[in-house]
Image 1 (tube, rainbow, N blue to C red):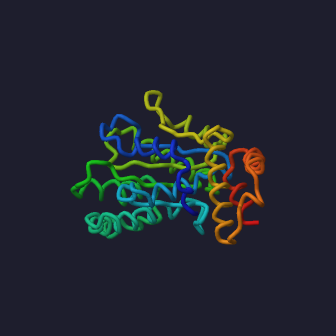
Image 2: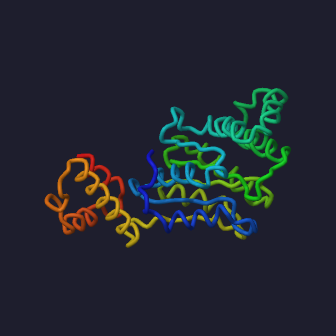
Image 3: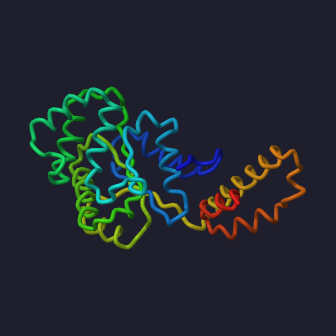
Length: 255
């Protein structure tokens, strides 16, 4: 997915940034970024992973682009990226693979513990902020039981109070996701989440800026006065029709 258009999504990016930069460890290590299809969750995830926070984002997994949408490759994929991002963990990940038999086919909780948690705990972290992993398109996981299991694994680890990393989980606000999170969260531990309102005023402002900037750039490339072929009323109408969905706006400019 592409990154956010410059100057847009400032509010939500700032809120995510505050969560990532929090060093008091008083906030939940799980952040649920949710919104309807087309609202820009994957674009936000890509922006976070490649922005000035990129040193903190050590691994990403996109169910939407994964050939396996059942989560069987989730933690092995994150572990491979972990070794790449924090080389000190490599020897511990390799040791886990050597000493624990068919770990890649074992239960998700064991994979998470031995491939992610233990390697991080065994190496000395120099950063004052906890590393972050991003899991996008969670609602596209096709195995309901595995979806429940891997979310339970993350929430249990968060509730332990000493998880050595944080997770941003992106999905549509589907009832089944709500139900799973409600089932597995502790009464005293709220799962921190950030919602992207479908028709919020800020979303409309961001889409208007995106369309205006894009049409202006088209005019410059064509060496035409953009005002001769689109008016502000045209932008306003497109913004209303988009209903807060960046996917609609980006499709319009590609036509």
